[in-house]
Length: 395
Image 1 (cartoon, helix red, strand yellow):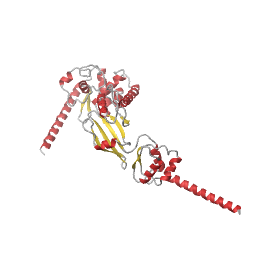
Image 2 (cartoon, helix red, strand yellow):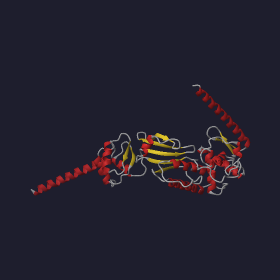
Image 3 (cartoon, one colour):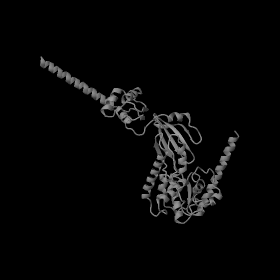
Image 4 (tube, helix red, strand yellow):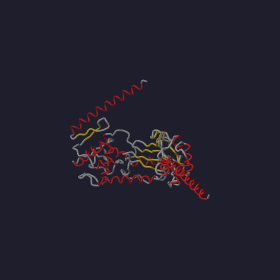
């Protein structure tokens, strides 16, 4: 009798083991298998949230099929206590295992809203964007220039949210004064700026920041990046350049930056100025004259006068020989690279060609022909503009 009982108990135990093993296998399959999401969603993990609360929210939003399996899987993988707050993009069919990895990885949020404070040559603007999970691209919600307008309601509301990401982006060619002026108006930053950094020493780039970040610390990061870029490119510079120090190369890079917005032209523009220096010619570049007038504090906003081209300032390369004493803007990496590895050419002149680029010439006669063509293009453009104004005025 006892033998029969023992046999039955053993059989029952084996059946239970098989059932448990089957349930575990089924649980692992559901945990690692494709999830129920048909479309991508933005999922927010609130600060201080528990894995239990997150699992219930995911189940309610249809991202997972079973909150218990999700919690057990997270616990088994040792990630139950590793939740990171933020907004995360969860793609269609994401498995529970993939979602656990997403919400515990940390780092920059992959979804939700972002404020990008863009500092450009002509203005600065704060742009609030929100990710459209269905298209996996950011959609602009609102933008404004803090220098001329109060923050709109959508921006004010977003600024109070914990999951909004903040970014400061410097355009190539901005001056250090323009950067400092814009940062002082950025209400999401804190701290005083004691002085304007030396011209050319800030790296045009995009900087991830936190709300309340220190302005001086951000400027220090911009300076560190530019220092590293210049050191890296200086080490791989071409031989025989007509400047002897990284600081002189930075001056040249700033002139290249202000002379062309066409990336493919930078090295060719640099070659013109290198050729001029090597032949003892003056650089005769308008952006240096403008800097001598404005000192980088804003935009001139008009054409240069003949008297200004003749006026002697430390930066007026129509009057002085060689390079000006300082950069005239903060050049980007491509312009620094162009200054340190210019094209090999015989060009000594260039002028706008009407397409956004420039026409290059080796002789003054060729250059004068290019200038005449550009003057004709300017005349035609002016006539078209006047005709458009006349037409609009008659409506």
